[in-house]
Image (cartoon, rainbow, N blue to C red; front, side, top):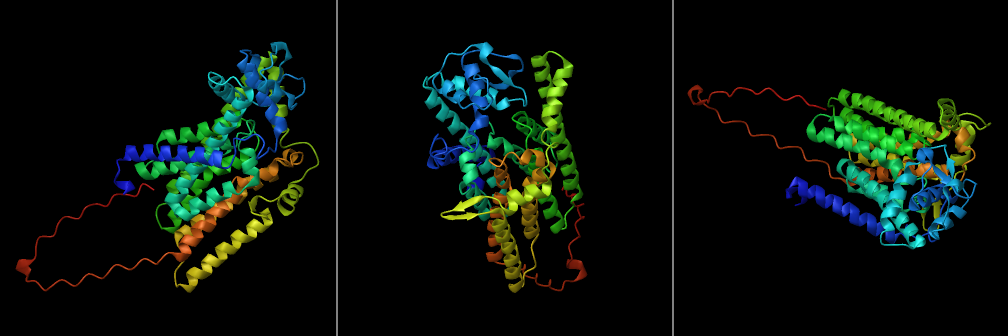
Length: 453
């Protein structure tokens, strides 16, 4: 019945449903609450509170970076200065020039809007947490809609269950510094590109711009985990490519879309670096110091230290913390990997016993799971120097997208295993014998349309 509703109305109802459900989940899971679900990086968040306080009191500094009013980066006292509306002077502000700080600008504007009707700093803080969490749920639900359309409702439910059962996500989605919803924006943009391609039979230019903009926004909130969210942007296209191969349809177009999407992602990174460089120039006043500031901060993630990729994988995978919590049972990365692999094997056995060949969706789910694992692993391999001093942060990467991709795959496999095989179409009855005079003239055969995919 939903498909009988006009398209524009369906879209509006879908957006309304996503918005309402995001609000309900935020308050149901207490993600807006400062104390009930906790934090895993209150240190970095202090930089955002100082920037919000700066904008609240109509002050500014060259470059518009995050910063601190207490002379020490990460000093949690900045949060209480914000909550108590403490008067500060511009010369007290110490700029943190190691990232663009777009989230500070965004939440600074939102805080000014909230302050129109709420002067209490603690109340505004909770409102900011709620807005941040609502955005995370909204982006996650957007991904679930794409999974639903591709692999069915169980896959979408699996992805969302992983979000709700992740202690790292539940504690961190409110964090104003890390803005976890921006980590998923590239994946959502890639999904939108796939949906537009299937609907229009071609890929519109705005879809690639959407990927570019998603990566740009993510990088302007911090250049950490670049390899992870670049892979996230490619996952929807890779799945479409695998499905096209499995269905024996033209797949070269999807391969080229992956290439163009990768270029759009890299363009987003480059432009974000250029914005950061201009901010640094405004702050330092000369190109030499501006370039040194950007290069030093960028190289810090991949060079220096004695950490190795093998050591980081052992630390965060083999000896990793629980990435999913089901009641008293915590599932660590090795346990979750074993569960997911067992689900793939069991589904294949069930399909074999039912005398059914592995459908293309099986390969598509495998592609989703493999790249879901590759996304977090890539950063641990490419940036061990950044992973080593951040044990409070790196385990979060398993939820982007190893844990939810595994849960979605299990849901999709269950659907494949229990689905009834399609009945073969009945053979048409042979036509009755006709005399040559009774035969109608044969219509001209139409030229079949080429498959755009």
